[in-house]
Amino acid sequence: MSETTFIIRATYDSETGIYRDIEIPSSMSLESLAKGILKAYSFDMDHAFGFFSGLTYDSMYHKHPKYEIFADMGESEDSLSVQKTPVFNGFPEIGSKLMFLFDYGDEWLFLCEVIDLGEKVPRKRYPKCIKSVGKAPEQYPEFEDDE
Image (cartoon, rainbow, N blue to C red; front, side, top):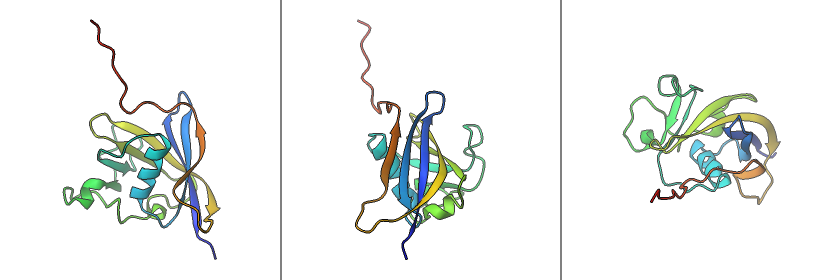
């Protein structure tokens, strides 16, 4: 029997329709999902991150559950682990949503929603981007001097 995969749409900017659909086995960790999202957007995984059930910027830090890498580092008492939490715990059903925050300084926000289910294919690498819509923002845009 094959394992269920989740198809998760990670939307960067709903106004311009920029999103990536990531397929990931339901038993993989939220940390693996974060890596898949960042790879799909061509971002380096060089900053802290978390998944939040508060879906607005104002509610993110206050609503539970929330899953942050800080919990895995022993630096948070009110967040759950991204390394130990399987995707199916964070997203229990189709339509489930979490806000993914990458880089607490630059605050890259991605709304993540389970849009479909699939089946894991043996000997395939996961997570994988199965659909890419819109041009990804640059993680480190070059700024021109005003001189």
